[in-house]
Image 1 (cartoon, rainbow, N blue to C red):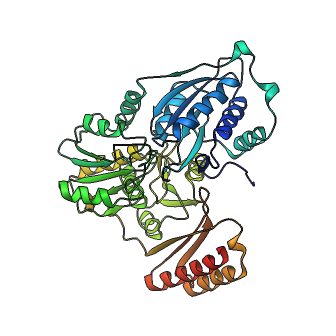
Image 2 (cartoon, helix red, strand yellow):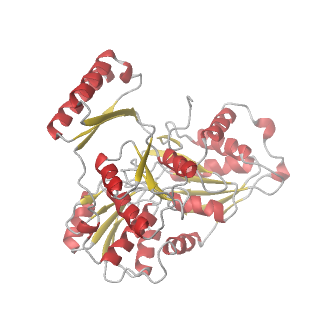
Image 3 (cartoon, rainbow, N blue to C red):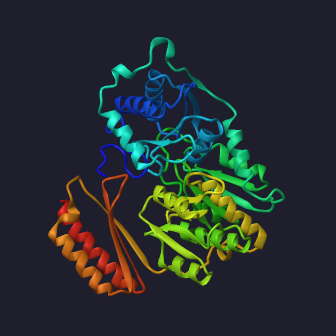
Length: 447
């Protein structure tokens, strides 16, 4: 389905470029109309991260929702998974997270959740897109039926208690020194507080948002600062969230990065041993390393692959009855607890294993040796570089050279104008050469 507004994770783009107050207003109206079902008073929960443009988009959406008769509950900066959880627990008809996730402050986005806290299906997004392009003046609420908006307190405590309840009641983080990097984003208040309440010695960084510094040289996409801090503080573990805290990566006591594939391996093995896996396997994307697949096979577990995007992982989990899935980038979905990726809850599951085994994180979180995997991005200004004959030829030649001893994955990003080229195989030099050849061809086509 060709979509005009929605990508793989809501609507995302440059603030005041693609994401304008006019668009935010119309999304509020269209989504509000799409989710008015029945005669009850309808309500929507709106959260956001710490970007400067969040104020502009938030108030525009409030105008949109109230104009079609929906009441609005504003929760301020909160992690995306917290907004999904609150949408369900507060019996809202709709949840909104204003965030561009791991992007820098110049971008922003709108993520929508249905009444059960799940991201919207393609069909519902298509319905909202149709409403966005239709005149809806005649469907606006009458003067007496306009919605109200109010800010609500106490939701931070709700999320902290929810996250703590995902751990065994008798488990404490006493004795663990944890560096937590909140990416100057949505989790800057709740996560350090939750870790402290669980007994950890907490060293917070990335907790001074100013509207501009979200994800800037910090967080899960830039873990170098976290690695340095872990070594400096002689900490046991470092946790890096992204701007809206729906993804996580860890750093071990040596300062080495632990990606989502290793986290999935840790949780999968632990849950299998405890009899907590609902099916003998997990769900991951085509980006997950072949090393993870081989490790799981050795544990008697399957790896079911999906296209890139946590929404596709969740869809497969629900369809196949799996309760663990995720992405190499650190989106980990634990469907026993959450309806979307939750970086903090995933980190807590790993911390529980660390405390149980009483071994260093470098040992606990190294379950397999990943195959060499090279990922490079080619930015373009539009058009279809992948349709270029030289690009097609380079991809075909690359597949022949790997000759079944590796794999190639070339895809357009669903969130930014970038083509991602991933190569994987046992011969790193060969993989690098294949990827570089394709990247060069793409660069010429994009130019």
